[in-house]
Length: 271
Image (cartoon, rainbow, N blue to C red; front, side):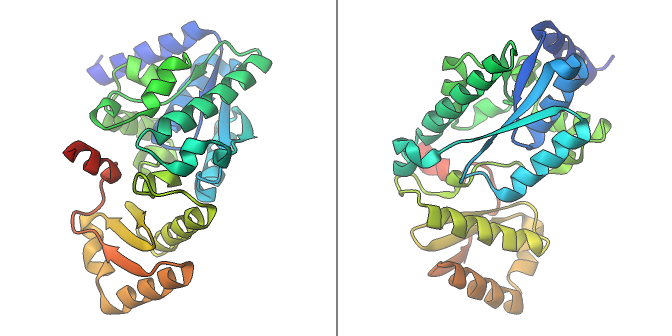
């Protein structure tokens, strides 16, 4: 048996040993694979739990619902009131820690009501390479990370997802809309809406790997290298400026470094 499938075998046994589990499920690459693995290992003793939030794109929520329905797993949702978390609004570098702590606490309460032994989440073996304050919340809340325990990397999760026929195998890595804000810039409902609509517009025009970062009223678009030529065509460039202007952006820029995860953390690494 190759190394990848030895890791999968470890994961399956790890999940079976839990007896029952609630999967923190966002519909992204990692949580979708973990949801499918938990369902296959535990059957009806596994449930998926999703937090509805102003910072969770509606597009992602709909995809999560479809994935859970296709898998046939019991799927529960709850409302997370992000603006009741002061640190979410103020947006310090540790924002993710405070939000994740509150979300995971609610998930644990749901698991307890449902008679489920534990909550599991989709961190993988690659996640320690970036600044992830949410990892502290996972540890403090006693949440388990089976994919990390199995040593599975993002690429390996994509390979196994493809093998299982999961549509998420080639999906762009997702993150909450708050990650588009420069640290220290207050988060508002209006600006969350601006970012979400801006990204929806680009997705609707065939761009896949992207982020629209917001700095005041300036939009900084990150795209994959392959998409640069199309993005700078005069007709499309002017249309993007027009549409983004209607959303409330004063300036629209194209980041020369292109798409990359965690670009807002780069300023922290330079300090």
